Image (cartoon, rainbow, N blue to C red):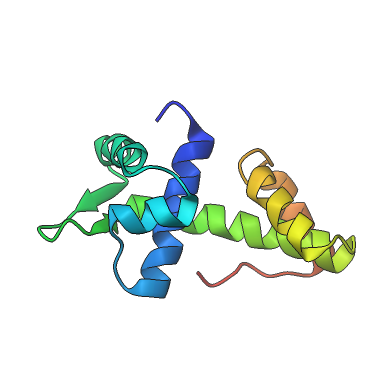
Length: 126
């Protein structure tokens, strides 16, 4: 996908919905993200072409091993950043969540590692 932030948001959403629901349909992703079903279909097509998502016979979205790894890394980045903002900087939880959603896409791995070191966080079990 051209827009990495969008791809990462879709991957993370599919991961979290699969944990919550046990399955993920395109409509679930659309509802969660507040976007149209055609937007999800377009994004899923691109993610499928990149080998990050598959669709089974029941039309459920399934992350490939590579997609799962990528989604987990984005989710970890989000959690580390959000925890840093709330626990260390005392940012309001709602603001921290919104900021983490943006920052997870642009902060380097080195910065995330330093935040984990600073906050005493270990690698999350995803």
